[in-house]
Length: 370
Image (cartoon, rainbow, N blue to C red):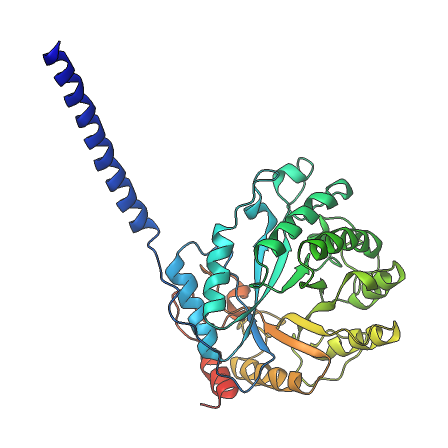
């Protein structure tokens, strides 16, 4: 019996030893795959332009050191604002199961670099939309679910993220689930999400939009003019449900100072949206330009030359300082985690392997005075 008990103890000890060895190997493998990256000391952005920002696109960046490196380069550029995408589908894969691990990583590194985060919320999980619909399709019966996610987000990030954009480009059919844009439906969704978010975090700033700069199409099936959509929102009673307006202001082939015109898409089109806000009694609310910029692809018909892109971008940042109603302007896009292999790569400031493009170096000189 004693021999049997010793055998059992020996077997138990061996099992425990093997378990500990395997656990150590597993932990070591995890550390190799996802090494811990310290936040580092608290940093501050040195800039001559407190309104300057960039859109960072880190939602698909999986390596922590690359997230940190990206945000370090943003700080060194002299842009204190970032717009970052926090997809609902990533953070709530199952109803009520909130996972903010990756979002925490991005926000904490951004904050440590001294950057102010504007969070863009959207992308519907599979469980919250009908079968065979795209991820931008949000049915009315799921507004409450999106509101719950937004409320959980602003509560989790209270004090770390103070600005949230409710949806993205709802005046385009592509961003509205391949349905005709509907300012009334968007306003209904905005109301539900805004009320839930404010209840969860009364300090949060709700941004409506962000409206795509477009003239729309005659049928109204593909897109609605941003001007018409904004007026439709006001007519539907949207004013009480947002604190600021998010808009997109691409320059296309026009210089930054090209005059605003209802029939032209250019950077100063934002002034027409501002005038509409004033006309609707909303002049006290600011605007955030959450996407903007120029493209320098050598063959795209809506692109400009690299030197023009640099000049127009610097000019746009400078113009923003003169608009007292504008809080921030964030250029699209700082860096992609991997090449897009299309004209989209020519919007970026930095390559996927962190090589600064000439526009990065020249904008850095302009914003920091180096």
